[in-house]
Image (tube, rainbow, N blue to C red; front, side, top):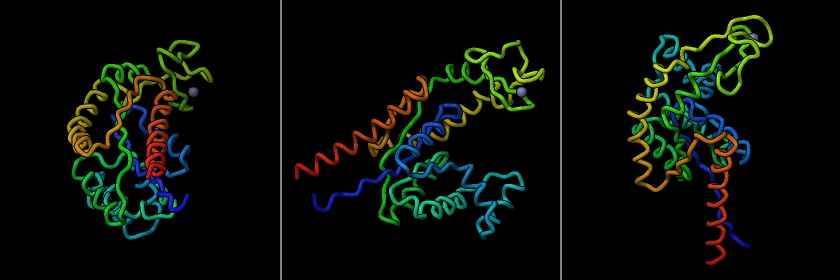
Length: 234
Ligand SMILES: [Zn+2]
């Protein structure tokens, strides 16, 4: 068939911390062979490089400040211009706000691209609290336990040595609920922004991660097959 349209996979994942967003994004990236780009990795990589931008990022982070939208925009723009993003990319952690969403649209428009998928990982707050607040970790070896599903053999102790398990600050109920509030304030308007442009795919992430990934992959495959069919009809 001549002149087949090239399918692209310009993708972002939105979701509360603990919703399994990072794992789903990484698995979809591996499946499609496109880079999974998390904000954290991007920042770390930039600081490790000795570029101008990296030096600025480092200065901001050393002061304990958050990297502003302008710097984030430059980082994202640089990253998306690399050769491995030709077929697509999966952004995880950016955009988080409407302002960042608009910045991303501009970056893409500059290279005549547009978003293909916006996945929103939905999780019920109480389910998230239940999942995370039962997590315990060994401060010595980092092994992770869960008081519901993955209990240590002896209560409160790591299986590998007699070290008392701890709960991370991030896994405390109060911290989780606070983070959910921040997420809702920033990201719900962004979700509406994308909903108005018919880009949203909502994924229920109360299910297992395998099930979640299956839904995400099937969504992409369906889009591909719909586009191919349309081409054949022409
Ligand atoms: Zn241990």
